[in-house]
Amino acid sequence: MTLYNELIINALRTVNDPDLHLDLITLNMIEDLQVDGNKVNFKVVLTTPACPLKDKIKQDCITAIHQLVDQQAEVNVEMTSRVTTRRAVKQPLLQGVKNIIAVASGKGGVGKSTVAANLAVALGLSGARVGLIDADIYGPSVPVMFNEKLTKPHAIEKDGKMLVVPVKKHGISILSVGFFVDPAKALVWRGPMASNALTQLFSEADWGELDYMVIDMPPGTGDIHLTIVQQLPVTGVCIVTTPQEVALADARKAIGMFTQDTIKVPVLGLIENMAWFTPAELPENKYFIFGKEGGKHLAEEHKIPLLGQIPLVQGICESGDSGIPIVLDHSSPVSEAFRQLAEKTAQQVAIRNATMEATKIVEIIR
Image (cartoon, rainbow, N blue to C red; front, side):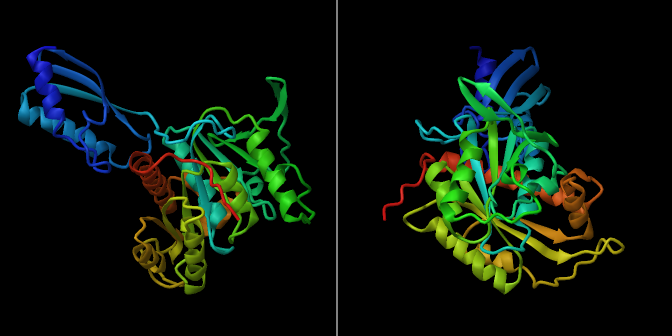
């Protein structure tokens, strides 16, 4: 290695990952360094394609080389990514999935499914490989939200076993119990039947290799939640609430369930949905019809990140009914809110993987 290469390496040692608080060299995030005269080329391998700080990291690299090595250097930085995982070994279900993100809420009616659907699509738009499981057994809504109400997934034989092929829509893979039941009839299932049906979505489907699996959980705290954390290594959970006190009270219970000593699933953060109402004709106005910043205060109370504040606009309802998630509508301000939510969620997943113990299933001893 030449002296010039050494100077480049030393300069990049001064550039820290803002989340992990270590330099890029120590984190092995610099690859394919090539120096030709005053031309410097290398890759920065981020922990997620949805990194919200990629532009800052790139500029910090260029600035460090100009200030510490050569002000005239022509620096070309290619920003790429390799999604991290902390899954423990020998976990049979969803083996090809690096990270499992549960989206939960303490109560119904807070827009959890809308958030889960748009979060999954937004992660996919960033370049990640994403799956979405509709685990709300008694009230599956993903078929409606993706305009696949009449879809019946087909099966293939793989390694001597018949596997369901997830539906591909808007760049992500989706499965829901709603694909397999009559939408006009109520599901009258006891807990074990519902849990077994859900398990089939994990174990009898050809999910392949994914960076993120988003699970739209049912509301409340019950059998389905325990089934998921006991069968899947959940990377972390995002809690959805609205600003009003009745929703916040149930969100506290959801946080308490996942953080209790017998479960200990990391809470990635809180999502405040319906944070304010903005009419289409007055896009700059905010009306706090459900209260102001209740979710923000709850996040501060529990010392967890506030991942996003999603406004209430008519377009969200219309997009859900039409089967086109609103994150795909670049003219809507809510689209950017969901994109930022995806970035912050991916950011928290990367921090969790770098700072916590390996992800494993929960063993609840009664």
